[in-house]
Image 1: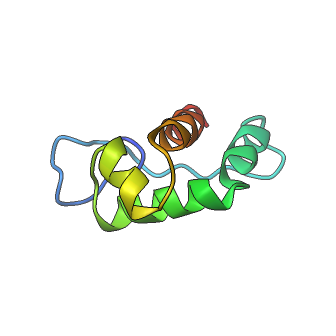
Image 2: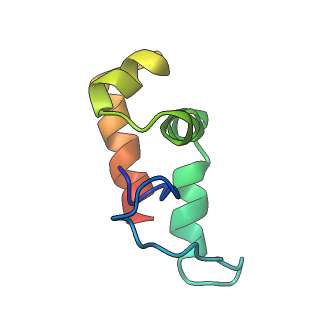
Length: 77
């Protein structure tokens, strides 16, 4: 999960933020992944407290399978 939201407190993560323009070929995948309110809640929860999928499911009140689905979409986007 650390690759999704690199933080300054994690020295092993060396990912630079990337800006995706609306006409970028990756924009459709990114916007599609973020179009779900569940995905946005998951992303927000990860930003606050990076954790495992089971704990995320509890914190955003959804199933583990749903969390895994959205994490896969967010990571690939």
